[in-house]
Length: 262
Length: 228
Image 1 (spheres, rainbow over the protein chains, first blue to last red):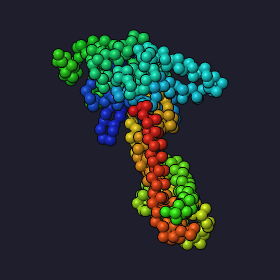
Image 2 (tube, each protein chain N blue to C red):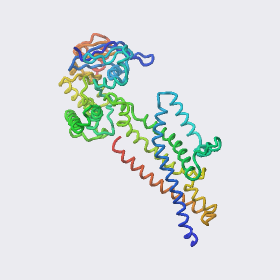
Image 3 (cartoon, helix red, strand yellow):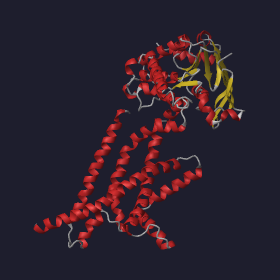
Image 4 (cartoon, rainbow over the protein chains, first blue to last red):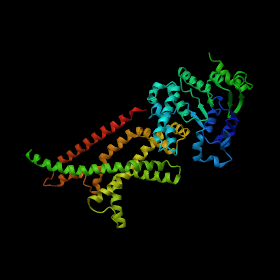
């Protein structure tokens, strides 16, 4: 069974329909890339998955559990949504690191706060906090940031910040890791180091949903590509098909802008 | 010159007593207005409209009228209109009334500074906290508060320096603060009258205290320089 099932998601802002009947599913350990021009609804879709926006209609299921159903008010409660968010991780285009914390503190913070809700927190406090620290250091090490753990975000390059942000999202061990144009704020050199980290995560069978403009990367890393246009999924399939041999004229037109570049 | 040397200790002692009252009012105002301002700023930003309107109305009235009028009304109104002088007589009653007026007045100014500080923290900080499963209060206290404090130190410094000097307004309800103490020697006190120089001395008290306040707040600002 698919780890993520999205059915008939709709979302409007005022009179503008941003998402029109979006449905797709994703298997465990696979990578889904979402491409499309600005304003096509990619980011809004990702924000709906992370409950930063509330869809007007549709269903979101993870591992068969219904996290969101617009028709079922019980799934819409604010208090329940906080726990449901933990199924998803989200890496932002603008990193959104916490500036007053070091890299390793950024990775640890949420987990430390969640640990306080464990029933055995008081009795095992030191042990739990040590585990959290070790895990954070391991993650930053995997991101190639062993020598940057005690740096504050403003002392890091954009690429390093984004890798800290990826480690921060991974620390909570989400079922599905989402990326919202993770390299759009980076120059080409820094883009490469972030994409390499993401490639490594894909190799480790991390389930990911990636909104991106990096077509070559999407082709290499994805199992599935969705092309969105004007709030709809226009084309969907394996990367060779959608990126290599698109059926729709609109997809071809969109992709031509990337191949024209020298 | 000999006369001046005789009068100097008497004047200094008197000014010290007045300055002590000034300092008391200064600290009581800060201790009361800093947290009250936060509550008012939450009120003005509340999504519950009646509360937000009420708080905005209060802030408008308090900021829109002179502190001196507020002092007079708060001190005299209960006694003159209802015949209930709730503040009690004497210096302690005057101090209480002055404290309430100053706390209310400064809390309203602080609340607007806080609001600016809170709203200037990028919305991405909220969103990052939310997707990491934090509660709204965790996001406020663990993520946004320090960023907000860093942003509001300069405008708060301005208000706090103004407060040092504004305490002299409490003289209008005859609180025996620094200006009151200096002015007494013009009218006649401790056998000294018609002396203007004690008033000049009071200015030095304000100047030196504001110097200390400026240095301390500058240090706080530096301390928060470790992040951007």
